[in-house]
Length: 577
Image (cartoon, rainbow, N blue to C red; front, top):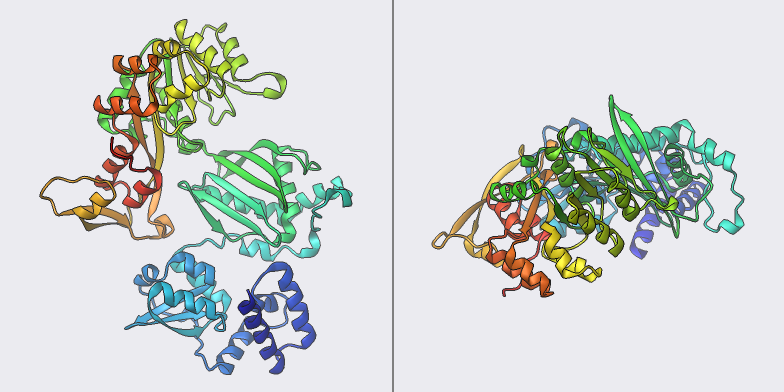
């Protein structure tokens, strides 16, 4: 931190000594910088003390560094994107122009930033030659060659600090003006800002939006294909207005900032309606907002398109046709369990079946299926709703999640009385589902007589089809990460994404599921009755032919659907028995 302060003060002193700005203007800029944690050069131009062109001309002449107009450059070598990663370009706000031998030419708005130069040299292994360009030109060049992530810049720059008021952290010292909060949340710039955050997230295919307050900044991130990506965020001083606007949209209590709140709303983008599930939690520096995007257009109800391997799909489809019993889908939050169960219900739905669901919340509306939303505050929880269902003459019941013994007992009672029950559990693999029920206090004989099948699933990113390229890797390298290949085969062809506009230079586009399907056969029933641990159950299931999550991911790697990196990120290699 000390080096950064010294460097920025030196830049300010140079500008003062050259008569470009006054000492008073420098002090005002430094004071603003302490609040926004922004670069001094950007602060000076934002405050109007100096233009970008004057700043660049001064740096070029005073430091004897060439100026380059990036808008006049010919096509930049695509290899620059591979050499200088996107995260480095955006973090250090630089743009690579060309490479001559071991010398990399990089455009910077702040050529005094020696830390950025050191980072580039360390990561690329090249000597760095610096040229100077304006921030506007660098931003446009990054958007043109790396993809547009500066989605909020224009709107943010139109929001003046005087339009909103900072939120004090201590509620005891602040009188809450509800009228002011409502008016701030309805200000046109704030409305446009929130709308733009939502629109860009939906266009990018994000599943979640995170707006996170920190002491001197506000961070916005999108979860795309399971990975969080930071985008350009609103300034700290609009935090209260942004949160207020989201509360207004979600019909939440705008004055309550001490307790968590949950809400939902529906927005329309280009004629398409999208549901938003909103969660607001108070943190040390304000309220954190997470919005789950539920786009019906992305819901996959075709079971063959979910990611099942053909042999695994045939086992799954056979077991969901049973007239009664329990089918459990396991995995962490956000692994696609709801999509799989919705797809299952869609395949089972017919006019002669009464299908009912109880969910928390209802993520997607399915035609022809009766769906109930859990409301614990009025006594409508999973267990009570499930009991009511049994008086509604259902054929198939979906319980959003078995969370406790009471819900598990009612689900088992429903299965024993001739109903097919589908539900979810939070376990790491399929065999752990039966031991989880035992840990809840369910008798093993009830589990053995009702549970038909347990599955586990995860989501892996799919290689972008537009920039997908083959490469060869040695069999020994694959064996080191647990992938066994045919004997005598020295090289294996795998695939990866190089990055393009279609995937915003990430190399992945979309996700697919990997599944671990375990039917409950006589061998496993005996193990359950004898309260055997999950690793013994898993060993028996593997001997019976169960494809594990790891095996399913390996298949997708060898078939060119995903990468080794995704395999290692999502699954782990189990110790040999």
